[in-house]
Length: 402
Image 1 (cartoon, rainbow, N blue to C red):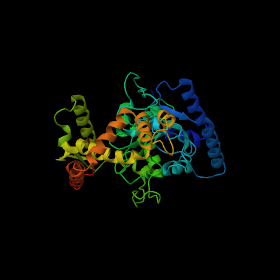
Image 2: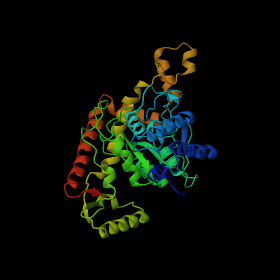
Image 3: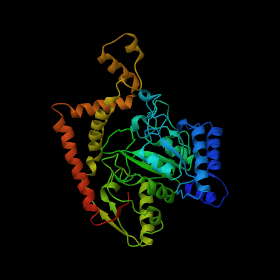
């Protein structure tokens, strides 16, 4: 199964062999003919996509330089698109429509990309298998009996299935990198702050990152070139000008220092993965890189720290979904004329799925009086230690191979 490449499609576009409308129509028809048995999409707006493609073609015909003309983009449904649904894979936001575009959507569309639809995901991006969505599980296009990974499984599956030539996901603790690996596409979690989070529905605000999926690293570079950069709407976006990612794709690895963390290759590592790691290291060394072992001594505390901090932030972020101003409201509570407290309780109980409720409860617990210092406060200190491990490693190496 070949993976559609934006760079490849753009070459056809620039040679006059197709149009943006033709590309969008091709992918829409492919998705329509397949009837999406993978359940990769929550919504597809064909009319909006075709109108947008025609606008791009008109701009190109007038001589306007649009670096992403021909990019047919699937967007994870935790990212806002104006006038379109934003459900986060949750019943509690079923039917909700965004009033504005996320910064990344604005920038990509301004550069010529066309949003084809919103992709399925684990509810509020909480999960690693894409089985936790109110709209049903996503299946892996390579083998539909298997999961595509999560939480951005719909985006990875849509790309691999050929329903688009680029996609957006989000990554809080692996939610781009893992489904990219499971579906056999390329995915990037940018450095926190590199890409604006304005218009991203928050799970864990100090972890969440928006990033691209593509067929190749070149596709990823083209997306990131446009997405990256300071955004005055997002106080956490870094005041750093984007590098020339497109030019860097062909720079090679000669002289690069590559570290392999010893804690990552110990007990429990699958022998097949170990072999692949060793072969990759040998190949990189043959291409001129130097390989050395590094240590990340606090690795063992990573998962525990992650689950304490992210669930605490989730508990806070998801408190706003209470059935009052927007989103799902319990009909049982409403019909009975219940007290406000019961409206909150019933709406949240019926509106959230099991995994989201589990994480809200855990997060509320670690933030509660008497447990805050023992759990949340301690996890923040351990997070600093983990970061220090990486800072020290990057004093001696340029990248880590894991």
